Image (cartoon, rainbow, N blue to C red; front, side, top):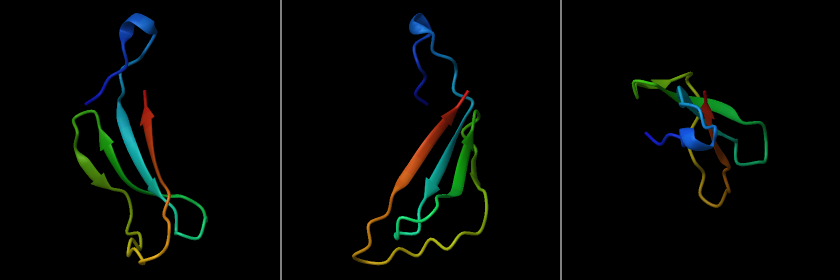
Length: 64
């Protein structure tokens, strides 16, 4: 797991969250998270069928 440098004020990352939009520039929905033990959790049943030709946006958030 990547961690920020303590020398420049970085804090330990405790978890990550993964979000995806609907391919129509709609709202982002959290689809998965990883905790500090790197356990993978699917947060909710989300329709994740990708459609050819659409552009999807994905965000990853680190929490500390």
